[in-house]
Length: 338
Length: 300
Image 1 (cartoon, rainbow over the protein chains, first blue to last red):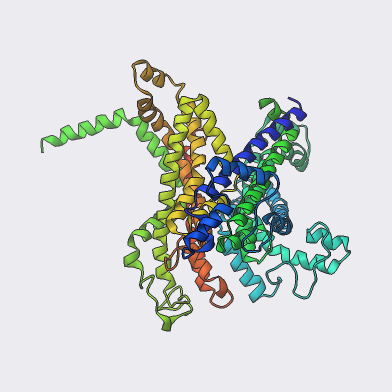
Image 2: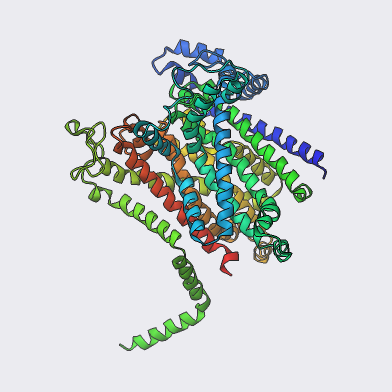
C-alpha cells in the first residue's frame, strides 16, 4: 500500500470515529441526564417554563430526530450557546483553545527533551544506578496526582521561594500582545515584545512541567524498553563489530528504530495532555479549554461542557491520526500490514 | 496414630503428582523475591487493605465530626497530620479515606471488568457482525481521553460518589473488552473448544466453562495495572467536585479542601495527596511486577 492510500484509509477511519464521538456526546447530553432543563432552571422552576424550554431546545421531539438535528448543528460548527457566558460555545472555545495548545505543546516538548535521553541512558546503562534512578523517577511520574503536584510546586516555588511567578499567563501589569494567532508566544514575537515573551515563558514553565511529568515518565519507560529490544538485534552487533563508536551505534543505528514506539506514545500522550490540562489549568488559573470546561461543569452549563468534550475528542483523534501517519512514514512495514 | 503414615504417604504422592505445579509456585516466589519494587508495591497495597479494614480502630478521632475550636492546627502530637478548616483530624480522615479509595477501585474494576470481559468474549467467540459492532463501539470510546469522557458522564449524571463510579466504569470497560476479545479469538481455535462443540455443548456453556477461564489471568494482570489509573481518575474527579461530596473523607476532595490554604496551612492538602500518590504508586509497582512475573517470555 503506498503512502497516499494509507493516509486516505486512516482519514476514512477517522471520519467514522468522529461520528462515534458525536454519538457518544449526544448520548451524554441528551439521554443520560435525568433532565438537563431542570438542571439549568433549578428544581423549583414552574412546570410550564420547563415545558417551554424543553420545546425550545427540541427535547420534546423523538430521539432520532434530535440526533439528526444535533449532528447537523455540529457539522455547521454550531455548538449551541453557553449558558454562563451567553456567547456561542464555538467562539468561547476558539478563544480558550490557544492557551491549551501552548501549554500542552510546551509540556510535550519538555517531556520529550527530558524523557527520551532519560530512557536511552536507562537502557544503555541497564541495571546501573542511573537506570534504577530513571525507573523510579518514571514510576513516580505516572503515579502522581497532577492536581496535587501542581499545588505543592506552586506553594514551594511561588509562595515560599518566590522563584517563579504567580498563576496566570502574564504578570498583572503586562498587557497581552495584539491577537494574531491567539498563541501568546507567537503573537509576542510578532510584536517584537521580548518582555512579554520572556514573562510568558516564566509563567508557562511550572504548569508545563506539572502537565508534562506523567508523559515524561511514560516516554522514558517506553524509550527504555524499545531501546533494550533494539540493542539486542543482530544489526547492532554488526555495527559494533565493524568498530563503530558506541555513540554512533546508539544514535544512528539503534535510536531510529527505537523511536517508533516512542512516537506512538508521544502522540497518545499529547491527547491525554488535554485531559491533564483540565486539572493543571484549574490549579494554575490558565485560561484554556480545561479551565473553561471545569467552570462550565460547576455552572451546569451543558452546551459548554459538551462543546469542550467534543473539541477535546476531535483534537485527540487528530493527534492519533497524525501518529498513525508518522508511524507509516517511519516504518513502511506498517503500511503493508494494514 | 495409625492414620499418620497413611497421611504422609498421601502427601508424598500428592507432591509427586503435582511436582511441576509446585516448582512453578516456587519459581514464582523466587521471581517475586528478586523484584524488590514489586514487593514494595505488594506491601503498600496490603497496607491499604489493612488500613481500610481497621480504620475505626486506627483513627484517633471521628473523621466527620467538626471541632471548630481546633481548626487549622498544624501537625502536632495531638493531631499528627494537623486539622482542617472545620477542625477535623486529617489523619483520621486520611485513614477513613482509604476505605473509599478501595471501594471505588474495587467497584469500578468489578463493573468495568466484568462487562468488558463478557462483551469481549462474546464478540470474539461469535465473530462476524457482533464482533465488528463491538470493535467499532470500543473505537468510539478510545477516541476520548478517559478523564474527559468520565467527566462528561459524571457531569450529566450529577455529582455524587455513585455516579462517579458509574461514569468511570462506563469509560473503563472497552479496555477489558478488547483484551478479552483477543483472548477469546485465540481460545476458540483450540482443539478442546472444538471438542466441546463436537459433543454438543451450547454457545453459552462453551463461553462460560471453556473460554472464560483462559481469559481470567490476563484480565487480572490488566486489572492491577489499571487500578492505579482508576484511583487517579477518581481522585481527579473528586478534586473537581464531581465525585464524593463533603463531608465524605475522599482524598481528592480533601486536596481540594486544602487548595486555598496551601501557602500557610499546607498540611490540609499535602497529606491526602501523599496518600493518593502512595497508593497509586503501590498499585503501579505491583501491576508492573505481576505483569513481568506472568510474562511467559520472561519466565522461560
